[in-house]
Image 1 (cartoon, helix red, strand yellow):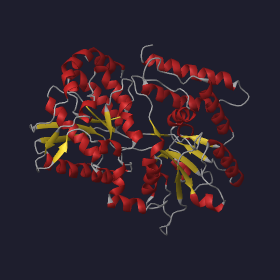
Image 2 (tube, helix red, strand yellow; image 1 turned 90 degrees about the vertical axis):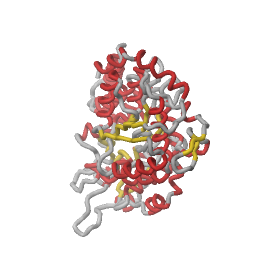
Image 3 (cartoon, helix red, strand yellow; image 1 turned 60 degrees about the vertical axis):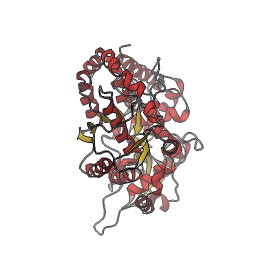
Image 4 (cartoon, helix red, strand yellow; image 1 turned 30 degrees about the vertical axis):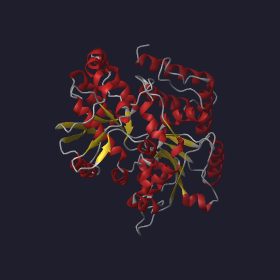
Length: 462
């Protein structure tokens, strides 16, 4: 990866000089025949949905030919594009996460979208209908705010992405067990601590909570407490502070008391512990909303489920000021010498992200949630949500919870090195959790934080 970054830096000026005019002018699509390429991570369950809507798009714009490639996972997309940018053969559009965009922008390869979004020109489509080339005020307002704002978390105030489909973390809980024992899902971390004690009194063999992503946990706690994590501008790495050490120490104590485990400490996704029918099991699991079906136990021989799953918002520091992480792919557009390729790419990205029917169908097929509010007006999607339950329709229940907490989503600043910060704070958590009682816990936590900061700085050459 460091070699790729070096190559990107070497060609940064060259690529930026060739594409500045495109960024400033945002020329309107003129009907030219162009082919645009789209890198994604869609599997066989999603490409039929994409094919259907590419066909619909081509009714409107028959001269825009969309070719797509599924490039493994998200990191595979990042690595492939990082190799292609120095040669100028990057795709037109790609699935992306914020840190991917920050990496690509070392070479100024990503097209800022502001001039496209704000372009009020009206264009006529092949079927005779018209549309505003940019986004109307109604379209902008239709995006779930937290998802939309992710596109401008890069420190320069510019918009580089539009959200495609999203997920978050939710709290899965064994509703059957909770109902039988008069328990309710915790709204705050204080309530969670009390709940873990109650669960251990009922089932001393259990591990009450499993948390899949230690990195998400650390970052979310910084957001919930309102304390520094990272910054898009230097100094970038801010998480070595007293408040962060305090919550890590608190959760370390909980781990030592047997209240919880994590994916790394458990050695596998904690959903396995949650759905277990063995003697040792958990009764709560915090994981991705897109993985709801993995949090549902296998059916009994008679077709029933061993227990019903409930889903709630993750615990909060302040239940009146909820903060939950925004995840899932966005779309970025790359600069090209042919301005019509960029204009055509914009129209396709706009089509995917603002089309109610596509967003509804893609959500139901993928397990991710739509990025626009008006999906609620789609009859099929409304019926999908109406069937939500903790069994056969658990994916719908997960989506329903995600949509109900739409005002709580946050994103972290993106910059070259932000992915390293994320990759360091997860192991930092588990390293601290494993510090045994009887040792100098505070000193070892201090050392773990210092080591993580040092690794982050090293990754960007500081």
